[in-house]
Amino acid sequence: MIQTRFDGDSISTRWADEAAPAYGELLRVQLPPADWSDFTIVAVPGQRSDEMLARARAADSTLPLPDPASARAVVVMLVGSNDLGQLVYARNAGIETPLSEAGLRSAVRDYCACARSRGWTVLPCTIIAGHNPGRSRTDIDGVDAARQAYNTWLEAYWDTDLGAAGLVRFDTDHRFATIAASCDERYYIDGVHLREPGRAVLAAMVGSALLDIASGLKPVVMGRRAGAGEA
Image 1 (spheres, rainbow, N blue to C red):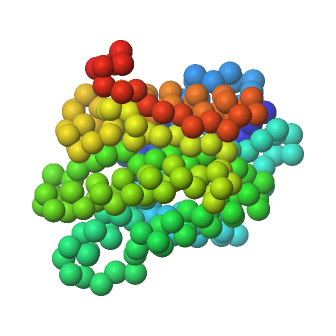
Image 2 (cartoon, one colour):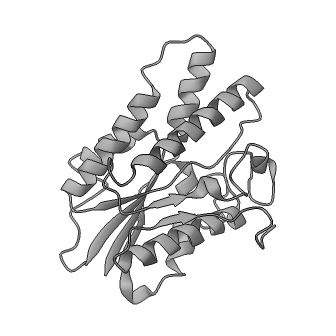
């Protein structure tokens, strides 16, 4: 049996569309039930990486010691959007903030170390594109540039620096790759959060990674390019 948890922010929850399953819930019905246990979503809407780390380190940790009967415990991590949004908005407004790109990377690094110390391995995911229609183009472009830089860092260091189980490159799927893509209402509700069809794409990518991990591999799962059989 493999225990699986989902940590991060609103993209891993039902936020903005409570009637539709979260991508982890969609994934649960896709995987062989006899091989997987403890599909638990511990992500919190609005959560930053430092808050996620604090909850993992708490006495009532979001990452309890795994069931001894489990062959492996994997936590799927998707975080950073709130860190970067709050950072860029403050920076563009000339407001001092304790947040930084280095702080995000440090919190993710420490979270992975904390998870390993508790018997979990982390499967990080890159951040999908988005746009807040209530923000200026300067803010939107600034957040997107910071998102791309963070994703590039994850791609470079998920194995050597984070000791992760693999990497899921949500940002390589054409439905989530650009600001323009986040305007597509087939997948996005509000330019930031996803409808069920968008969540289903995330579920399929994470499911592919988890099956590879269960087979002893360290996968890097890429998304679909435009024109590769999907609208």
